[in-house]
Length: 273
Image 1 (tube, rainbow, N blue to C red):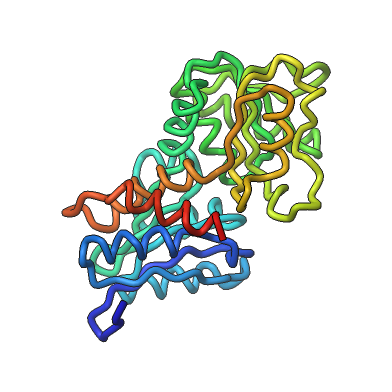
Image 2 (cartoon, rainbow, N blue to C red):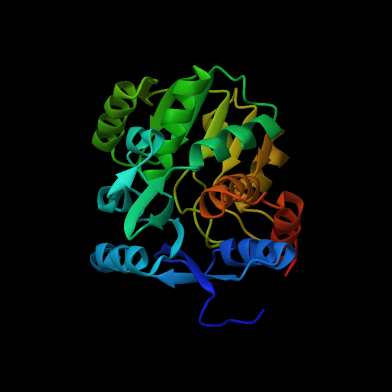
C-alpha cells in the first residue's frame, strides 16, 4: 500500500483501540478495490474527542467510533441519520463539505449476527451493559419486537437504561431475579483480557439458547467457549464487526460495493495470529 498526498484518511477512534481489527478489515477492502485510502487506529481520551472529530471533518477524514466514545460522538455531530439520533450513539462518521455527519451501523450488525445464530426470532433478549453499544441492542430489540431485560452491575443504571429503551419503543425492564431469557448479548469490555470475569454465568440463565459477545479475540472469548460447553449457541463479535463494517463502508464510499468476503477473510487471518 502506497500513501501519497491524495490518500484519503479513515480511522477507528476509541480508548483502548489497539485491539481493533477494523484497520485490517478496511485496508484489505481498499486493496481489493484499488481505492486510494488508508485506515488507522487512533487512541483518543474522552477530553480530546470533540477536537479530533472536528479535525477529521475539516480534512475530509472518516471512520468509526468504538468504546467508550459512541455516545459522546453522537453529541459532536453536525448532522446525523434518523437511526443515529434514535440510538443516541454514533459508530460511523464522515464529512460532507466540512460538515461532520454520523450514523449507527451497529443495529444492522446486531440483527445480522443474531440471524446467523438462528436467534433473530427470539422473544426475550438480555443486554449486558448500558453503554453506546447497548443502545444499539435496545433499538434492534424494538425492531425485532423482542422483550429486553437490562443487566448492569449498577441497578440504578439498569433502571435508567430500561426507561430510555422504552422511550425508543422497546419492551424493556431491568433484570431482576431469575433470568428468563432466550438470547444474551454482552456489550461490556469484559473478555478483552483472558482473565476477565464472565459477563454472565450460564447457570444464571438456564433457558438461554443463544448468545452474542460483542468482544472478539483469537480463539474466541472465554465466555463464548464456556457457553458452547454448556450447550448454548454462541459467537464472538467478529461477525458483528464485519456486518457493521460492510454497512459503514457504504457510507464512506457510496459509489462502491463493499467486498464482504475479502473483509471476512481479513478478519479470519488476523484472528488466527
